[in-house]
Each structure stands twice: as C-alpha cells, then as structure tokens.
Amino acid sequence: MPESVHVPDHRAAGAVRAAGRADEAAAAVIGHFGHRLFGLPFTHLGAVARPAQRLWPLGGPWHYWWQAHYLDCLVDAGRRELEREQHYDGAFGLSAGALGGRVLGTIWLRNFLRFTNSYYDDMAWLALAAGRLDALAEAADKPRWLNRRALRALGPALESAHTQDLGGGLWWNTKRDFKNTPATAPAALFFARTGQRGRAAELVDWLRENLYDAGEGLYRDGLRLVGGSPVLVPDIYTYNQGPVLGALLELGRPQDLEQAEALIAAVAAKLTTQHEGRPVLKTHGDGDGGLFTGILARYLALAAESATLPEAARSLARSLVANTADAFWAGRRFDSHRSWEVLVFSKDPAVPAKTSYPPGEQVELSTQLQAWMVLEAAALRP
Image (cartoon, rainbow, N blue to C red; front, side, top):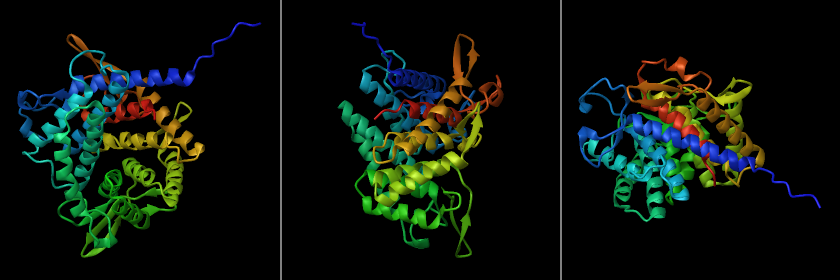
C-alpha cells in the first residue's frame, strides 16, 4: 500500500504570508509615524509626514480623516492579534487594539475636545472606524465607553446631514452646498451596520439614481448647488466605489447584490492598470489621494469573502486585492536611519518605492496607510 503523500495547503500558506506582510506594514507605519501628541502620555496619532517639517504640532494640518483610517488599520491588526493571541510585532508592548483606543481619544483631544467637525465625510469615516473598534473591544472584553461616546456624537451629526434637498443624500460639509458620494456612501454603510437599514437604503438608492454612471458602471463624485441648481461633479475616484460596495453588501437586497457584482466588474475594467502582466488597482498620487485605493481594497476584500455574491465576482475582487498587495510588497524599499531601518511603500503599486519615494524625500502617512490597508485586505479571512 503506498505511503500517504502530504499535499500542502497553498491557500493556508498564502494566508500566513499575507498576515506576515500585514504585520510588517503595521510595524513600519506605527513605528515610523506613530507619536504622542505634545509628548503627552496615553496619546497616539499618526504624523502627517516623515521627516516632520514642523516641531510644533498645532502649526500644521493633522488630517482628521487620515487618523480615522489609521484607526481602521489598527483595528485590522487588532483583529488578527485577537485571533492568534500574538501582537502585530511579536512583542509584549501595547497591542494594535490598545493603540487604536489611544488614537480615538487623541482625535478627540486634538480636535479641541470633540469628535465632530465640519465635514460629514470625515465623521462618517471615524464613525465606521469607531464602530469596528467597539466590536473589537467587545470581543476582547475591553472597555468600550470611549467608543460609545464617539458613536453617540457622530451618529446624530450624520443623521442631521441627511436631508431631502436634491432628493436625498448627505451634505459634504456644514456649508450644505454639495451632496456627494464621499459623504453619502460611508454614512450609508454606517447606518446599515447600526440598525438604520431604512435610512441606509434611501441613501444607496439616491446614489444609484443620481450619481451612478451606467455607461462607466461607476459612481461619480457629487452634485453641487450653483445658483440654486444642482451641477454634476463628474470625477470618478477609486475610494468612492469602496464604501458604496460595502453598503450594497451590508444591505444585501437583490438589487444591491446585482449592483455590487456589476461594480466589481467595472472596477476591474476601468480602475486598474497592468503591472507585470496582471491588473492592479490605480492610485491617485499623494495627499488625500494617497489614501483612496486602500479604501477601495478594504471593501473589495469584504466582497471577496461574501457568500452572497457569485464565485466569479468574489474571485475577481480577491485577485484585484492580491495583485495590488503583491505589487506594493514587491516595490517596497528600506529607508536607513542611523541605527534602524524603515519600510517604505510606493504611492503606486505599479511603480517601485525607490522611484515614487526616492531616498531622502519626505514620505506621507496617507500613502503608507494605503499600502497597509491593501496588505490588510489581502490578509482578510472570514
């Protein structure tokens, strides 16, 4: 009788490799950009750029919404820590989840003792991240009062921006002259996750009726009031497609799932570029745009693991995330600092970091969060 032959589980090996890459990205971003606000104990934020140009942190922007996505990435790493009972860096200091709690509290402190600001898209991103942090804290049996406090402040603020002006949708900011996908889509996802499914459905339907471009298969940016009349802002960005996809999956009505499948196909057809014979997601440079494609990857990863979608759509979403993660990883470089090295990721998965961020050039937090988000998305398992 022949001896049994062990067949390696390639998917399991790939999952371990993807988790290891995500851990390295977490350690790089936290180690390089994470810092105390004013040196105060128990505070933590991400520096906007390294090396920093200003010594006094109140002298420049701190990017509330970048911090919200930093928190989201910390929650990703925290979920993995909880599953395997090991910190992201293999050490015994603060966990990623604990750092996430500090980020949320420091956002409140840096934002002059409040969670709300003038931009509803910013608040929607923070509400989503705070909700995920709260779920992580519940699973880990950790204190949840700060998360709940944030959600009590942010939820009503988002509700107040949902009006019937222009037929529905969310205002972008407190000027109330622009309703757009960047505010409406993440708010819809937040409402769907927090039991307001009717409100979420209204917002998703408004997006489909007003900002969905059937020819492109993608969502346009928004409707701006000019002289009392709505004017379409036709720009198409990767990040706008992400929370729309997330909201469609969360609602899960037949029309939502059909739209989600079509949206994944449109992303693959219109928002990718070829890199070494494989499609990778397009990016939008640096600044705020440096975050955009990481956000899309987060929700493509959820689609890849959604049992409500056909396998072909799931496989397509999975391959887009995996290809982009592989490209970011392959294009990384190390930046040497006296006694230590820093892992630096490119702004664009199709361009190596040594080209997009030559040694000595200032590196922005947004682009590093983007790569980290993509690597976390590749490591996601149901």
